[in-house]
Image 1 (cartoon, rainbow over the protein chains, first blue to last red):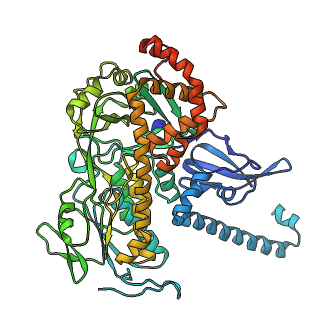
Image 2: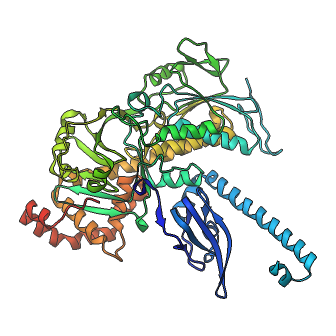
Image 3: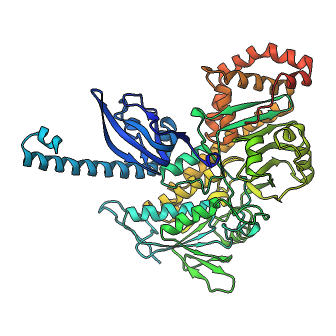
Length: 135
Length: 468
């Protein structure tokens, strides 16, 4: 029921934002899945996927830096855009609006820490990064 | 009575009455203000490891169609509120949103203009607050109010489906009495009843300095049209009207799932005004062929708060949503969200004393009321435009010109924010008196004068009526 949907539909493979773009908004997945990927030297590394109700693109809101990753629809996805300026104004009025975002970022830092530990353990076991990548 | 200090981190202390483990909170009214307050209160309590019990008193059954589940409202969730709820984790799915709105169409007697959202996104939600009009046999959508209340229940709230007869005080603590029951004492009473209740009058006699808000009447009608027909005629646009009809301040026609909601605001609003509006050619032009204005599914004339209360709090008592302070004419649910959250923040982090609410809740209410004062001036300007055809022509000419690619939508942005309630009135007013906008008006003047000399027929002929 597309007329009942909030946000905008993105078809499979359609890019929501490109890595390197200027970040002036963040996104909430309303339906479907998106993948977050980093492009380097012509190849892509999919970092993770995100689903319904997940907030994305928050790093560009708090840092004056280009987008660190590309967000792309995996299958048909529906995304709601939140404007950076309005969002920051609302946080200024109501700091508790940032609770959930801090929670999300904290969760991601925890996940990244876990991955770093796993990689370090793998490096210690195999001797070189190349071997880790091969595994 | 729990009075004293609470210590979350070893150095953060609350003076006076505070919620502690085992405290009991009564929320009177389970509409958006009450449900959102409960959701935020329990969420914040969880974050600081505080165990509290919340009872929500709500006699209506929001999942049911007809008066028993109806909260008498146009059912528009503003762009700002959609975004706030999304950030706060309150998800509005396609089960709740009957139609995503991506544009506004402003209709006047001299033509229409469509103003779209950025990125062509559906950024506004059209919902039914209850289970729908009385002739709904099987609702295809979940009621918005039921959805919010379920969110509060999932957080741990207890809903008591009973009408509150009396709110009193025993030993300084608020008490709640339902019909046939004994008074129950609480550590905090949150009044979120809206204004269409006699309970507020009794609260004036409680000796807490509460005086009811000033009210005006609105008229809301529902028409069963059918989803396909709505898609063809009204599309995904909210239709607003600037018509020079005596006593009419503002009118909107909102496409929902199978129904179309008509909302009127004005002086001494009544059926006669509704009939005049429904018969206007601009209204008939957007409704499906054969639409009969008399064949409505239901109608109500609820009151809305147009001047909030000066003291929406007392010791262990706080008034949120329409029963306290709300936004003038627009985005009442957005104001309910703001006051509900401010009250929850105060109760958890600052305490439930009169002083805590004065220092931390009242500023939010005052900000809304201050903005309403500016809003009153903004609405005077729209009223002036309503009276003078030449101004309506100028507005349309500028707004249409701004729809061209590359044009900065100065007036369109102002109109969008006025109609959608998406920005503070102060912000809208500042943009209204922008000199660049005045220059655009002067530049549009020659064309406007030519059209005025030719007469309304020429203007309408040159201006196809955009439906979506």
